[in-house]
Length: 296
Ligand code: PXG
Image (tube, rainbow, N blue to C red; front, top):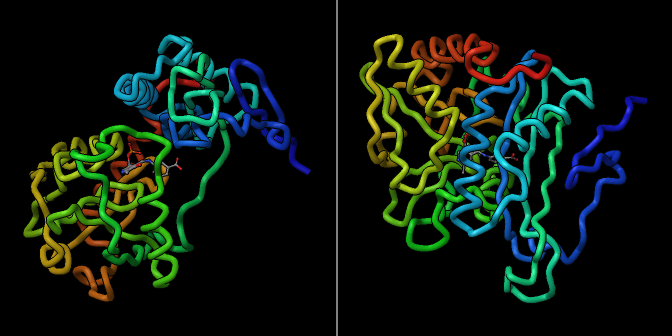
């Protein structure tokens, strides 16, 4: 039997089976909180500063004051990884509004809760990276700027869950979501890229896509190998007729898309530009300059 993972809740460690929060926590009652998904590869926490920065921006936007400084948060994450003796991990960092009463009023929640889970995640069907994944455009729209704006990485992920349900019930690996005008925005937890005539296109953040940290890395890697990346709205037709397409995300990493609503993308297998970027990505994730060492 493996030893149980130790989970950080508000400065105290609990075994996984004992790690619990109150049913009065507004994170549960209202999805009132923010989160980040982060990965550690071979002892380096990839883009940790960037994830912490985004967490604090999301918290600021919902007027949630995180009771740790950014430096203390970084230390708490590193300490949790060390405590669990991990070098490779999926880190789920959650800050909830905390315990309140049965009303929306966040002033009733005097103390936000910080949860750090260091575990593993596997989103891929077998052979996903080698062969690509199948996708479908679902009826589920991403959150537009004029409702719960998509820039906040909040605990409200119901529309992503609905998209995932569509994918599962249709028998494909992942769903793609449109904005209210019908432009393709992103997957349920990953950014979309297409390749056409040697150029890369990705929907801009203004379309409702999260400003993905992995996407930023992919854009930089593409530019490094001399490929132009253009942020532009993408129609379903442009996706159907792309030469190549792929997803990026912390949990998903970089994965080729082989099919959209039963239409083959390109040759129906990972294309040459996607493969080059995946190779470059594989190298960058363990580069000490790209993250924070756990045992430094
Ligand atoms: N779009 C959305 C809506 C996301 O939530 C991404 C894109 C990719 O962003 P990064 O910065 O990771 O490259 C995300 C990422 C989880 C989980 O369980 C995390 C995400 C999505 C779904 C699940 O930790 N976030």
